[in-house]
Amino acid sequence: MSSRTVIRGGLVITASDEIHADVLIEDGRIAALAASGTPAAEAFGAGQVIDATGKYVIPGGVDGHTHMQMPFGGTTAADTFETGTRAAAWGGTTTIVDFAIQSVGGTLREGLDAWHAKAEGNCAIDYAFHMIVSDVNQETLKEMDLLVEEGVTSFKQFMAYPGVFYSDDGQILRAMQRAAENGGLIMMHAENGIAIDVLVEQALARGETDPRYHGEVRKALLEAEATHRAIRLAQVAGAPLYVVHVSAQEAVAELARARDAGLNVFGETCPQYLFLSTDNLAEPDFEGAKYVCSTPLRPREHQAALWQGLRTNDLQVVSTDHCPFCFTGQKELGRGDFSKIPNGLPGVENRMDLLHQAVVDGHISRRRWIEIACATPARMFGLYPKKGTITPGADADVVIYDPHAEQVMSAETHHMNVDYSAYEGRRTTGRVETVLSRGELVIDQREYTGRAGHGAFTPRTTCQYLN
Image (tube, rainbow, N blue to C red):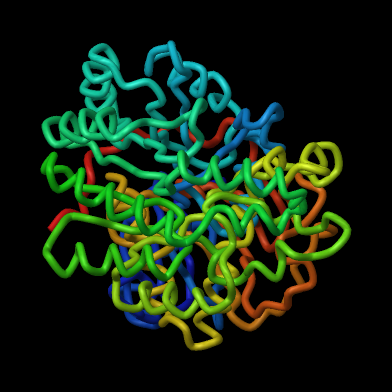
């Protein structure tokens, strides 16, 4: 492919602008934009031309929350870095931020090195890492400083999963204090795992073993309580806080209160909470197991608060928490005991299309679509303006998007390495047509032309979204 490409005739949409413009790409970066049909656009001259007439030209999506090849609950997420990043590209996402995991008793370095080994040479698109901190001690705290220096600038902690990832309030406070000093961002899985474990034990003792009870024991109030506690701990530490996969309206209310008080507190939700509900968890014949994730799906009435939070910017980002487990052989580990169902849903391929459907349905505007799926995750995680926008100097991560194409989501046609779709049979309007990653065609007119190893590790600066 030549080092010069011109995308002509499309509507360029970023978080801040919509303009009919031609886009010049040189040597993997955006070189210039010029209004379509003007002498400046004509001067872009020769090279490979992509006709985007009647289409949107948008930045590649930035998915700030994925779990490729993640070990969990006695099994491992079904997507490898190769299959998962290929599926992401099919869905218009050109950067993922995955989670390296520190094992209890191990170091951050060992965890990060293990994830580098999984990803290197295998990714179709660019990738970065957050670090899951499972074992806070003096050595871990020192290591946090070193990771920030090398571009791993966010650290996830868990108020859930006692005995696995769980950190107590003292460990959380220490990590937050360190982040306040080194510029790192603490990401929080906010659920009261100690209380949830009591409710799980009681439910199983009553013979309540079906998947729907997963949602009933992980109560919205326990998500809200943990969210409130995380906010207060961050306030004490003087650190910014990013709460992952917010699902409950009560948790949104906690975030809104904190933001109204001027705190650097941020929230992410995911497509499953916007489009699915406890109705899915209650599907008969163990089908509900397909929808087991944590935080859990909520009753449908919570969706309105999530959409409102996205419109008012009390929620800033939509990521997927992509963590797929096949129904056959993996989700089935929890037959007869919902607590043994591996937690996680596939979704990295569906996010951009589902959020475009939200534009069609009137929930959000086109620019807000790009803001929550591309620009803000790039700013939140120190990747902007290299990623998340179309502007001179940015990486040429560009998607040609057909806003009129119709599709039916299905496991038959998706590219994720999982045997079901969480959105099986859902009709959506809008579809990815062509994807470039750093100027190279990864999807060309609905044909995969990418390759494992094109995707590069991308070091990040610290959070660019602070008040």
